[in-house]
Image (cartoon, rainbow, N blue to C red; front, side, top):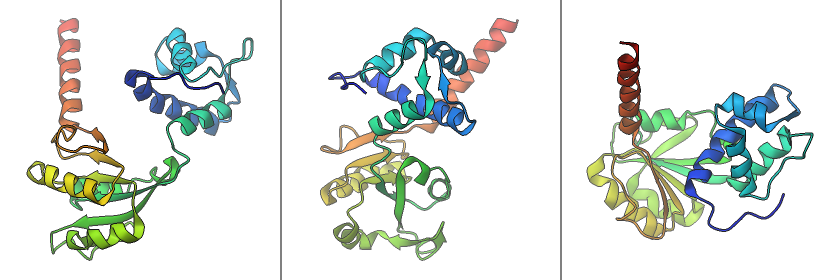
Length: 216
């Protein structure tokens, strides 16, 4: 694999997980190699886009052969840091927090859940996917011993900034934020991925409305 070009567009980076997902499916189906054209048809993008995206990281295909599925999947996983075995915690053990804790693909993708925290006495002490929910009061001591890499926030919007700043002070490296509060401006020195589930739902609503209009 060639060297990654500097300042690769975030738009390209955001497409890599989709490549990884499709290549994983191909690998599990026993597919050894695939052309950019065939991969493009499967992903419903253009072959040119795939080649341009992968060229940002040095290029992987061989003329007349295409892409080695297993090697390309492993290379993209490497670019995405999936081989680093990130240790992860969840803050907020409500319905969404429990659902994420039970999500089976975490460890397959290199994320090892090591802690769950909440302040609700009805939740603290409960076991979720083999992990006992701890009270937030114990998080300082936990960080001293475990030093987790990533925190997943499934907490109310009104406490998100306070909790995120606390995590930043303890040394968290990244936050996957489901709190419906954009944290980029409020928390410095930490990589943040804000997830707005309602945005995706509203996009779906637009698509449905657009299709209704086209079918009239």
